[in-house]
Image (cartoon, rainbow, N blue to C red; front, side, top):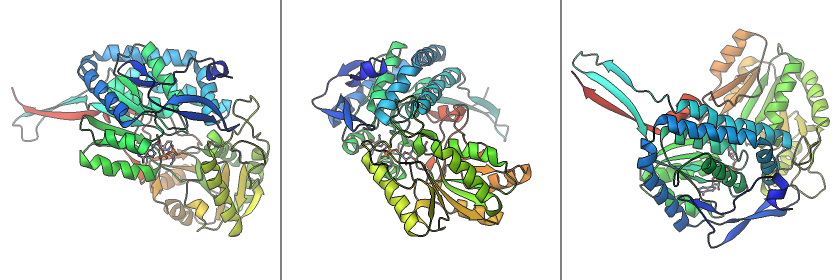
Length: 483
Ligand code: NAD
C-alpha cells in the first residue's frame, strides 16, 4: 500500500528548497518499524542541496522579517486549523514511520498543532521595554529583532511536535528556517512543510532537507555564516558535536537533549494517582520520550503496593503494530534502539534485579519489546544511568527523603523529574531541591506549548514553548537615548 493510501495524506518525498520540491540525485528508504519493510523512498539531500536551502532562506529573510506580525500570525493560525482538520491523517503517518500507537500519535498530532496556535498568538506580542537609566542620565530602550536564518534539527521520536515546536516560534519571530528531520521519520516533516505552504508560508521561508548523511550535511550548514541560529532536539552526544561546531561562528544555539527522569513516590502519595502518572510518564510513546520516567524511586513502605498495581496495568497493555487500533505499545523505532533496551535489561537482571513483568523482546517480526517492570535494581546499575528509550521501568526502593533526592540528582542529565506526595510542603521542598528544568508534581505529563520546556545540566540549553521559546529566535537590541 502506498503511503498516501495508508494515511490519506498526499506526502511529498522531495527536498523543499526556495518553494520548489527538488528530487535530488539519490533516495533513501523509510522503513515501517512494525514490518521492517520500506514505506517510501525520499530524496537524499547533499551538502550542495543544504547550502541551496540556506541561500533560499537568506533570500527570504528581509521580506519575512518585514511581514507584519499579524500576517505571520494569520499564516500560523491557518496552519493550526489545517493540522486540526488533518490530525487523523498525520497520526496515521506518524504511526507508520515511527511505529508509535495510534493513540500516542493522535496525542502528538493535537500537541503539535497547538504550537502553531500558541505561536500565532505570540507573533503579535513581541514587546520591547523602555526605562530610565538608574543614573537618570538617559533612557534605555530595548527591542527584539529576528535573529536570522535558523537551522532546525529534529529527532525521530516526536516527528511532528519537535518540528512545530521550532517552526512555530521561528516563523512568529520573523526567521526563515531550514528543517533537517531525522532520517527514520522524514515523511511527517515533509507533510508538515506542504501544509505550511498551503497555509500561505512564502517561498524560501520553510525549507526541508532530508538526508541519510546528517553529519556532513549539518556540518556544512553549521559552517555557513548566513545561519545565525541552530535549534537542536536529540541526543546529548550529538548535541556536544553541534555545540563545538557552533563555536566557530559563535552561533546562537538552543539544545533540547537527553533526559534520565527520576520518578519519586513517597510513602504519603496517592498510589492510584502515582500509577496513572507512571503509566503516562513511562509508557507514552512506548517509553521513547526524553521526558520518559527512567528511574522509579519508591518508598519501601508503599513499593509492594505500587509494584503490584503498576504491574497489573502494564500486563493489560497490548503490544502490536502502531496502526492497529487495539495497540497500546507499538514497536521501537529501529533495531539499534531495541538492542540497547535488551542489553540494559539483561545487564540489570544479571546484577540482581528481578523482572516482575516482561524482560524480553517477543519473538516476532518488527522491533518490539514487552512492557517490563524490574524490582530490586542495584543503585549503580547501568540502566539507571542511561536513557532506556523503551517500555522498561526499573524500581529502586528508599526509606529516606534525602537519599531519594540525592540519588535522583546523581545524573549528568536534568530534564524532568516527577514527584508524588500528598504533602504540599514536601512536594515543593523536593521540587526545589531536584536538579531539573521541569517537575511533574503529582503529574505524569509536563509538556504544554504554553510552558517553558527544557533541561539543566547536560539536558540542554534554552527553552522551547511559552514566550521564552519565541525569544530564542530574536536578538535583543538596546538603544541608549534621551529626549
Ligand atoms: P540523535 O541525536 O541521534 O539525532 C537527532 C538529530 O540529529 C537527527 O535529525 C539526526 O539525523 C541528527 N544527527 C545525528 N548525527 C548527527 C551529526 N553527527 N551531526 C549532525 N546531526 C546529526 O537523536 P535521536 O536518536 O533522533 O533522538 C533521541 C534523542 O533525542 C534522545 O536522547 C532524546 O532524549 C532526545 N530528545 C530530547 C528532547 C528534548 O526536548 N529534550 C525531545 C525529544 C528527544
